[in-house]
Length: 528
Image (tube, one colour):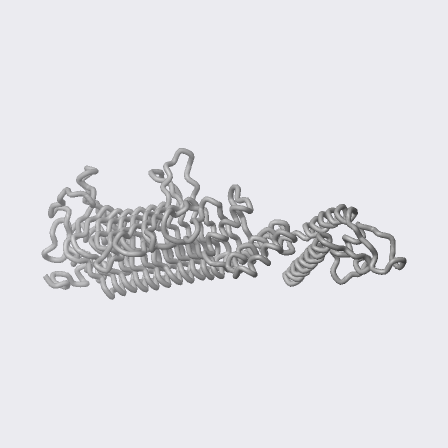
């Protein structure tokens, strides 16, 4: 039958020829704007994802559905035409490519025998809830309102590349399997006017959101992303989110508002990612929230946050047992973290990572914070230490900042040749590289006291008899220790034997102390 056969604009009250009983009922429900429900009332039989067959009494042809949506009959007087199907099986391929669909569309618990094709189609609002769909092909689709796909199952993936969703895109509790290219959802270049909600989503393949733009928030609360077929489970470089990216837990089994705190006793499902995650160059205007997130990587996979920019990074997930966390070049204002969330040495990279404030959740002592920096620098790199010291100093923790800079010098010493390394040890033992200047005074006092006691028993004939000050062992020891300054003792007394060697050692130690103090002071002045 051709699309115009048996139906003319003047015959608004007539039905087209060759409609089945199920299609005739759908036609009338469309004109009336009412729900067309063909479900049997048996929960098992009505499950669109189950194996129970649906007969011709529940089946309509996709071509008739397209006819209604693209060029359907006028509404009955006082009614608004709309297509609202429930428990209906649609045979053939629903092809609305390039079409403009004005009526409201809502399909609940429906079963599609073949792919749904919506590329470059225009809708006001499109809702498919708890439907079984082989594949949704909707590249460059345009909706003025929502596109809802909650609890649907897509055996061959979803394509939404360059789509424009006027308000919300909802994928809550959807189950999406990969297509032939290995992607479960291809949303590259997609624009969503408000929220993208994909809570409790199950993605079996690569979820690709490259260069996508989300007007408000992107919620993957409780989602499970798995891609055993490739490196990435979430591939979203240059993703732009107007507010927050949520990779956090969600309540299961309870009817709840998206983003609300689960009620007491509600079972919680964490966000889980089995496969790499790439968020490079992303912009998140409020925060990136990884509260209790769980990652399962192989050795060559990673959580990549290279050059990400966000006011707040909440790094509060479980520590990945394998794989890497990369924050190179990222810029955040508040780093909210806990010690148990970060990977160990060799699996954390933070070159060029900038943060302004540290907000630890739970105990995070300085020794563990230094281990955090050490884990991120397989080879010596001063920048992470200097960044941490700057943040601590700006927060009024000057003593901790000095400890961090001292740790930086000790780490640097490990990369130096043997002579410079020995000189580094001397600076560390004496004045702690200038960060503990009081230690030099202690060393000076100890040497002065020891020298005074020793020289009190020394034979000390004068160089010129009759022309000398009184012998003072304490002043003599101090004159040996202080370079440049002459107290008038060393040049007027003669020492011999072992006392000469002791005097030479005192002079050498005095120079070492003075030089290390000067080096430390120079370092402090340069830092200030």
